[in-house]
Length: 120
Image 1 (cartoon, rainbow, N blue to C red):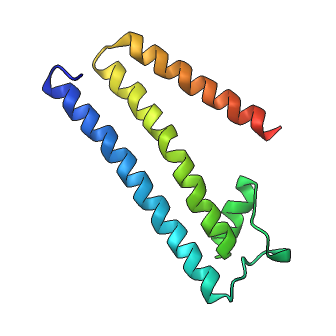
Image 2: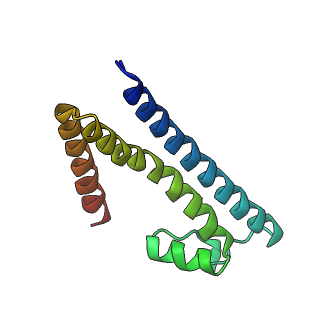
Image 3: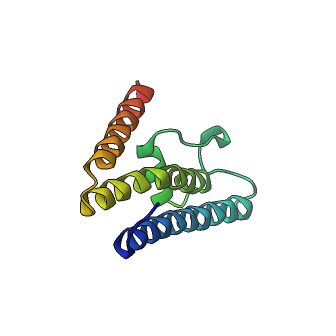
C-alpha cells in the first residue's frame, strides 16, 4: 500500500502506461480488422494465413496486410504487461525499494528467458 504521494503518483503513472498500451493495441486491431473486411475477408498473405514471426508482422504491417496489422495489435497487447514490469522496475528503484525492484527484475529476466526458449 502506498505510504506517500510519490508512491501514489508512480502507481498512477504505471496504470496510465497499461491503459495507453491497451488502447493503442485495440486501435491497431480494429484498423487491421477493418482492412480485413475491406479486402473481402483476406489477410493479404498466401493461403489467407496470419504471420507468426515478428519480422513478418512488421513487414506485413508496413505493406498494410490486414492479417499482419491484426497480429501487430495482438503483439502490442501482449507487450503491455511487459512494459508494466519495466515501469515497475523504474518505480521501485526511484523510491529506493530495492527488494521489490530485485523481485521485479527477476520476473523480467524469467520472462525474457521464457520468450527466448519459446522461440526455439
